Length: 81
Image 1 (cartoon, rainbow, N blue to C red):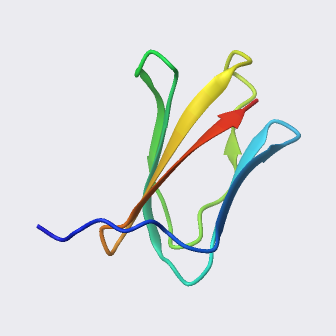
Image 2: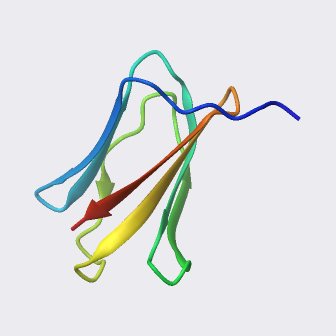
């Protein structure tokens, strides 16, 4: 098993009901959003540079974003919509 490392130089933010993910020089494989109960509310296998994700249908609150890179690295951040 490949040890998982934190993705460096990355940002996750919401602007105008869109979730944006920026990761420098790391090809992103998948993105998943979870609510605070652990329920998966969004999942997408994405391109190397992910497109903005429409989060306008989600209830306002705190969510956990898990980003999986092709090299096995992960990053988890909480966002507020």
